[in-house]
Length: 137
Image (cartoon, rainbow, N blue to C red; front, side, top):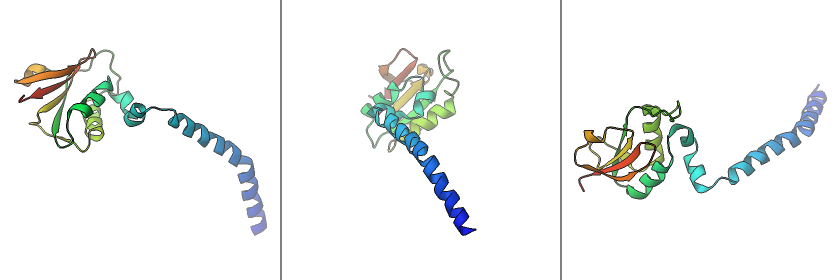
């Protein structure tokens, strides 16, 4: 019985190994072909209306500063995955070690009402209704 089990196992490995190895090698090649931004964004490409806000926020907000994510009504061209909770969660993750705070000087505005943040000035704006605001400057 042991010989039979060993023979079946060896046979399965001989038959299935090349195909499994080829699949893994293809996935590794596809991942290696991604540039730095695509690797960093990962699933954010399907959650964020425009991933450029991540690059801008990382460049502008120092690691020891805080930020606030404000999400307004979704725009027509946003993905159905672009919900307020998903956007806020992804931004908290991708901007670590920066922390989210209600009174933060930086406001990441996803089609938000800019008037709700008196004294905040836009430092970056894109065509998708996204902006980075700074208050107390």
